[in-house]
Amino acid sequence: MERKTVKFSESKTLTELEKDDWGDSKSDSYIEQNCYSLRKKKIREFDVEDLRIMINQDIGLPYLLPKALQMLEEDPLAEGMHYKGDLLCSVLRVNSEFYKSNNDYKVQVEALVKNAIRNMKSLDEIDLEVTKEALDEAVEYFKR
Image (tube, rainbow, N blue to C red):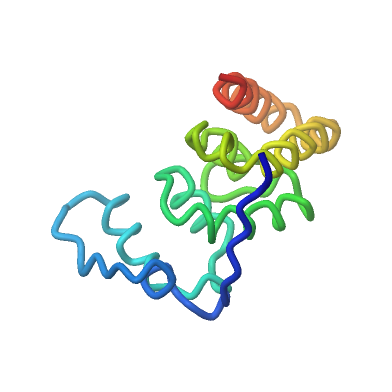
């Protein structure tokens, strides 16, 4: 199955693109508050950590995954707040139904994993251990 390409302007927010205003979070949850806030941020302003958070929650995938993949093409071990490669691990944990409908993305992610593994050789011992463990687990999830 081919990729379902969505054309959009990165100068818009998820709220604008999805035509769905969630309002303000009423939760004490950091993640929920952050997700609500990020829905109001222009896509072009998203950094690695913003993408990691939203992709982990399967929010805005048609708009955010292409940006994440672009960042990962430049740096397969792009790091948000946790460890080298945490963005790629988030991308690998996207709901499998999304990849079934967007096989081109799946193929691209598989290539990114190979690049990440090659790039892991440059990591120090601690980063290598943490990244390898996380990536191995995420790859297993992705294969399901």
